[in-house]
Image (cartoon, rainbow, N blue to C red; front, side, top):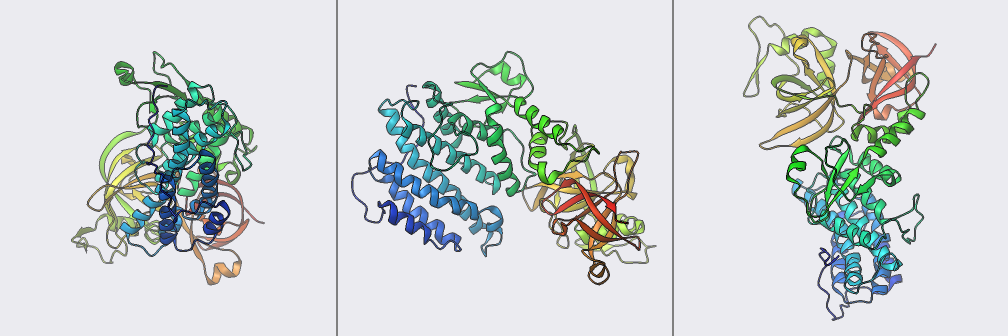
Length: 527
């Protein structure tokens, strides 16, 4: 390698008394940060790490202090996830700035390790023989990968030039045959830490469309990929034909892996290409799922949900997605649990609402209508659809419940042949802001005809403080067992439910699907 594309802060020889260079005192300072005050803690960390990186230090001293910083920041990174940021008393702009600042901490810490890498490269050191240099490369790649992951978790753009620096660090080790050398790290690792493994883990995450996942699910998936990343093959030659599961990496470009297409094969505009084959990971995950499938065909997803999530995202038949086609039609959508209960409890409510016009937020009923419409149906544009889901574009009304990832909604006439008398329930799997207050919603449709029910943890709860859930009857034509869709907080082995006035005690048998807020269970009636 003639040159290494890495950004590093300039160093100066002048001492900075504000920078703590004693490892013990630095560790104590980190433990005394006001961790409950996220804004102040992040500000202090930036004010400490940034000038530290500018000091001219020996490589040994820098690495020692960087490891202290890294261990101290692990708790910060764990606590300040996107769920924590949502509950802080901050404006939307302040919350976004805080998310950017937290992401910046990953990158600033990575800068410190990149200084060590730059020094080693300039001196011609061999990372396969120099354990400290290999450790610095690994830590820099680990932190850059976590910054990219954090950007996904908080729905922010990938920081530049994160991808090209990951590629360059990989190329540096590739040139010295150091990709599979074990890295010396202080903490216990569940798998052997290598540069190739941490690089492939980031690549696998990049090739999956994870917009429908929550932040917690993203982290769960990322950790799972660490175990399976060693199965991927990174090749040095681009094939002459398009192959399923093959992605191209340009080690000189600031972009993630790109799916190999016929257009790319024609242009072949890569400077330093490598290829990533994801099929071995998908096949291994499928085999694991098949091994853990129960005799009745139901899979205990509380144990295997991350694996099933991985297989679905890698494009297997286990995934939820079917072939999509352009739809481009307007459909009516019910938002919120109470609206769903209202429309599903009486078909007449749906008919009446479909005949209701809304002008300037005012409901205008047809002349022969005798009752007011308690809930509105909003007009949304369906951009595309498959047998199992659709992409919606629209604006949330003032009176509507804001749809979030994991929340429920209803689509009237999901398939054109259903007409205006059928309301299909769906789960919001991902949500994106477009412009002018409009949102895009990726929706997974739940098969079956939902019926509102009441449930309680005990028979007394059912009578005195019932909660809302939904019952899906058995459908032999579609091969669906009867199931219950309940709030995640209702998670317990048995519940008391009331369906059409009749009370039962039911025992949860297995999980059909999960979302951030709801879980769908197969069940059996307790006799």
